Length: 467
Image (cartoon, rainbow, N blue to C red):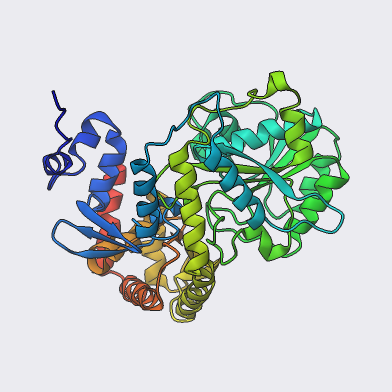
């Protein structure tokens, strides 16, 4: 008996017109409710490059990119073709006690692309493959403790490194930690961009590693130019491992292959994920210096002391190799720098035009638009009303019309922040950037008329929050 093919089209039709119903029943009712409340429950049916299309054929500019996953754009044909060719070859994936050949090839390529070592230093030259950024951070934490024999890990306030237990213990967002009881006691937070606070903790002599995002994802907080180089130097002076979390900033997001390169920083461990597979297959890669790796896998009987079932799987490795090929051949990192600089310059011009805009910051196509208390009395009334109810409401009064009126998909930069974050695919064009700026211009202009239709969104959200 021949098994009939799975009818994917029929499965899609089951959700046509009501994409959140089954999510609400069986997956995440709270999230489904948020989507419906904000009007983000769009029935998307197609994605390509920097765009999404709904069932009616309406095009949206995607400024989320799956939280940074679709760096080379959605459904890139070269990556899809590579995966299809691999599947047609019937190769023996995951023999487990056997060599995963493509893993070695991808590891070699990642090492070639890694930030260059400083004179007299060792290069990142070993790679551990996992499935996500959180899993990569868990790996880095274990590596640092094994390599140094020390217990503590330092991380930054407002930082984000994932939601598994070890990563959550190093998560600077209180909202993610609440409700899960006591976390692991060896993790300690210091303020981001504060060298004195870091030096104080390192001087205690028990710090295994310092885990830091070169640019913080929650808020798009960019450090001063001396922070990361000096932090790496302090770590080495005090015998701690410097860990760069490049999960979101890696693979061209900031206009360099890795964000560390903006400051000439050489990590001892570098965690990557998100954009590595083009969005096709979950994958993460942890690059480390050999002396660290050798402390973990210190003998033959410890050759699998840290492992994961799906690590090194051929599908992820092929997707990773194809993604790196596309990044290089299509000069996507360069496009991120060029279009990102153009977009940020045009958004920054709005700051002089509108009193509600406090700051525009970022690098490459990782950009934050932060709002702040207005000067004029009428606008102060609307601002205060929303913030008394919920500190997260005001950005939604911008995001909802961006979606409904201008078909721009974006989100806030974090909980209780008046900041919108733009994280589009790195294939974004200047024409797309112009469209984004024009949408922000019109939306923010409407909010400078109080009372007015734009503020009605805030009132509706206020009523929802109160109930």
